[in-house]
Image 1 (cartoon, rainbow, N blue to C red):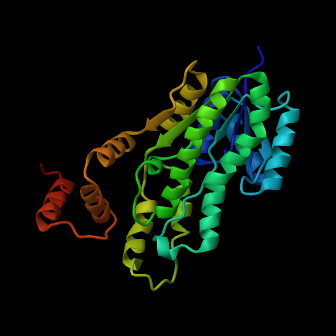
Image 2: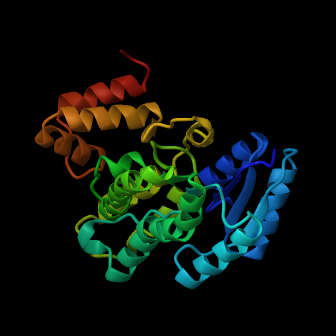
Image 3: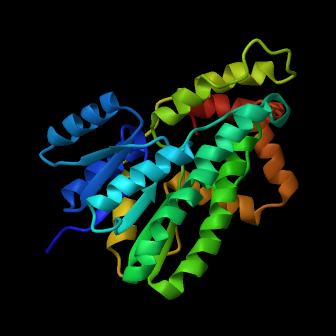
Length: 294
């Protein structure tokens, strides 16, 4: 049987690379998209070192012409179009709402929100004609839970969740399944690159929080394989769930944000990002626990 073809956008690093490796080793015909030929060569070499293989196509998801060109090429090598697409490519734009300029906002929304919708538009006609196919959108727990100093990133992911919900209902009568993946915090370079996008040389009232946020964005996190394994589950299950929360932090954050009063979650998020100071007793308890106390 010919292996099912799956396009993974942003396949060159982080979650995208983990997904590419997971699917390639599971027997899928993976087509990874990256923006440059140098990245394509590096991706093919990285996958080959693990004993698998991947085909590559150049794609800048933020560019409509590049998207049409890439998926036209993909259609020629997949009998009209891929069986599935994993919309993984994304960026994180940190900063207070007032400190992020219009161009940065447009880039954030173009890559994280508009691009997945554009790609769906390009692949759906063939999927609909076959009455089979899957679209998997990589969101974030930030698609459910807004955080200060990450407002525009959260907006892009919450927008992605809204269009994914609508698309899931629209595509279902034609045999196309649409799935949302909501990871918590995993180690990918999206956060290091996000740190480089923090407002620089600013007179912002949030400049102290930005200094702390830079260290937070660069902290060591667990690897992204759990996300990749969840994507594999979403593609291989006969009846995938509409949404998959990935990671204990994602599940707990989603539950607490939904269950607790807004005033309580606002306060906790402000303390976590340095916008408020925790009461002295809470600070002392935190220091005790960090030293191994109970």
